Length: 144
Image 1 (spheres, rainbow, N blue to C red):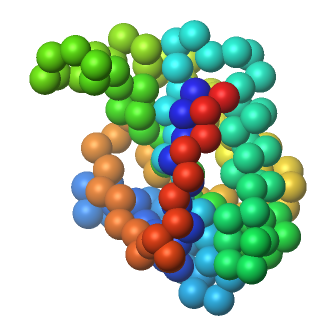
Image 2 (image 1 turned 90 degrees about the horizontal axis):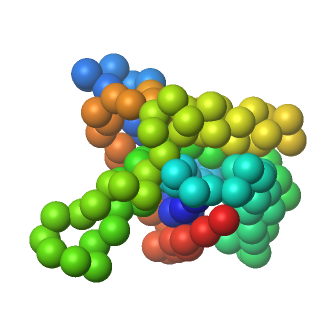
Image 3 (image 1 turned 60 degrees about the vertical axis):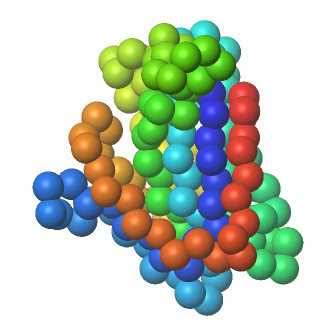
C-alpha cells in the first residue's frame, strides 16, 4: 500500500462536472491523501496508512491532522502501484483489484472518522479531476 500525503489549504475532487468531495482549510491546513492498495498488502496495511494520515506531524507548526482538527480529502489512486522499471508503459499488476481495494479505502476513511477527523472522499473507480492548493509545498510518501 502506498499513500502520497500533501499538505493543502484546499482540495477538491470532481466527477462528471460534480464536486464529490472538497476541503477548504486556509487556517489549519489539511491533507490530500492519494492512496493505492496493493495486491500483496498485509492485512493490516490500511491501519498503518490511516494512523500515518492522522498522526504524522506534517501540518504547519509540526502538528498532525489529529492535533490541528484538520480535514482530509481521501482519494483512491491505483496508479500509485504502477511499476515503471522496464519499458515505457507502467505495469499495474501490483495494484489490488477493485473489489479488494474499495473496502480497504473505505476502512481507512472510517478509521479516520472514528478519530473525529473530517473526511471527504473521491469516488472509487471514477475518472476524477483532483484540484489542490499545495501548502509549502509539503508532500510525503507513506508505504505500508
